[in-house]
Image 1 (cartoon, rainbow, N blue to C red):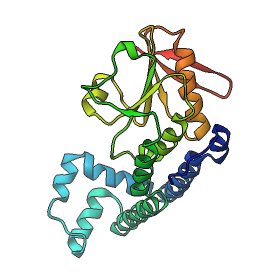
Image 2: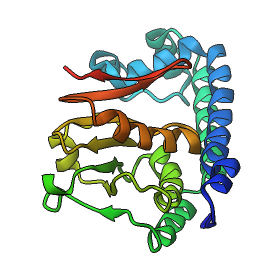
Image 3: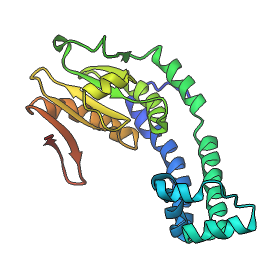
Length: 240
């Protein structure tokens, strides 16, 4: 997990980021296909947690009791056996995810790679001054699996990135102040006062390209914007 690449070309060719995301997406795609069979059941489970009235009706009912089971099925309009099957399927899926993507190992790899990486940690009190621009901040949280997947590759790419300083943070207060709604997320701060941001991407090349585009395109942009790329072009859309 802590493999160090001597050249950017080797890193892009090996693409450790896509390898992990492909494992993750394959598992969730398989679960999505299963959920198609239990569409009404999935909706019923969601209702239990979002509808207080339904939750009250179910309060005290035990699916192991035959009469209660009939009441549960009447309230939710689905079979208890389907609820159990879907619940088991979701539990099995999460177990597969944890096995395929070892977050503990990713954290160790990130920690090791940081030792030889120029990325610095910041928080609300150590946020870089305007004089340090341009710089890019990688926003993440500890509960975010895609964040942990992305971090080691970001640390590897940082060794080859020379267009701006790189920082990372999990500070909730800072994310709120900077209006960061999703993680993992990149935000570039430019000398002209502009702030442009983007998703990280699902491959090593996408992450590398986004880091570079935020700086190169952000230099001629004013205000706040989001980098949006299609198959044909990339542009920065102003943020309202």
